[in-house]
Image (cartoon, rainbow, N blue to C red; front, side, top):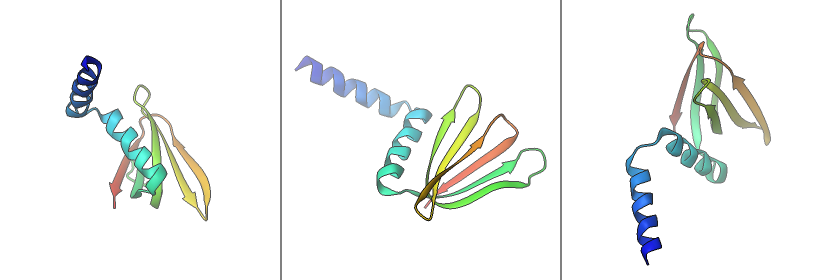
Length: 96
């Protein structure tokens, strides 16, 4: 019984901290199984030019230490991947 109570307290604490990585992981799981639709735009941070734009089901892999982002998306049933490395870009995603 103590293990269940401890697990419940841990789960509540984890959800209340607002962990960005946990939130993104939950959204990616949702996207993997229910095809979460997003509008994604990646801009050059220096010029404002659009580097990548996509609207549809996708999910993200990020590396917080190096600011790298990978976008995995589908085109005609094929999974494709777009990688953005470094800090020279602005990443915007809107869920539909």
